[in-house]
Image (cartoon, rainbow, N blue to C red; front, side, top):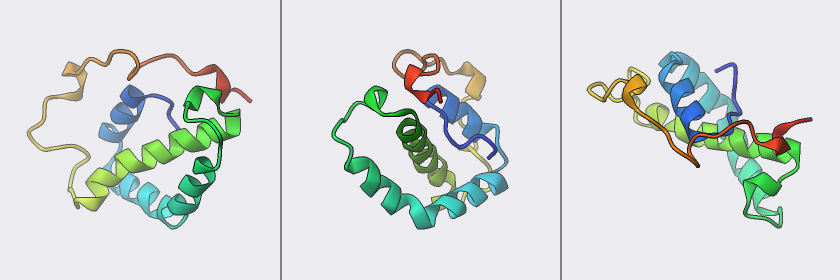
Length: 108
């Protein structure tokens, strides 16, 4: 998965369902050994609001969310990147806060 840090649910969902399951599995395997340390690090930050994080922290937070969402097909050993008989992704419509522009705190 070339882009591993996506700031909104709609983007993460669309990335997951458009990425071959083999690439999803590689991403999940790459991050797995580090995810507990990432979560521990993020838990030390004194805010629960992702929009208040510093840019590197925000990108790490978004990458952790991407990992958690991508781990579903990997953990369930799916052969494809979405549920076989699910609605086509283009039929889904995301609303705020699931879809919004790039957060200001993701800039360098």
